[in-house]
Amino acid sequence: MPRFDYLDEPKKKKIAKKGKSPKNDPEPDGRIHGQTAERVEAVYVRKETIRAAWREYRHDGGESVSELVEDLLLKWLRERG
Image (cartoon, rainbow, N blue to C red; front, side, top):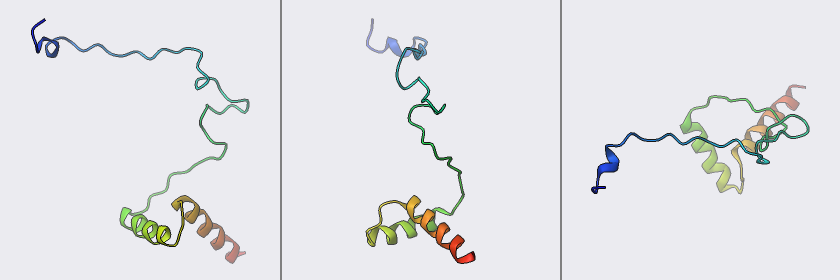
């Protein structure tokens, strides 16, 4: 085979094998392996806002923006009650 002939050949699609992998087996509660029991919802916030808050939170020793958001939402709910 000449040096670059493989570029002219049609590409073969890789087919994933569906074997008996523990990743394919559902958990006892019906979740797929790797999913958490908690439901997650997407929210939209400007990148600049997230990045600025993350820099400050990390500077103060925080580890996760998700934890910060959850803490702020819970605090807001408590204040309303």
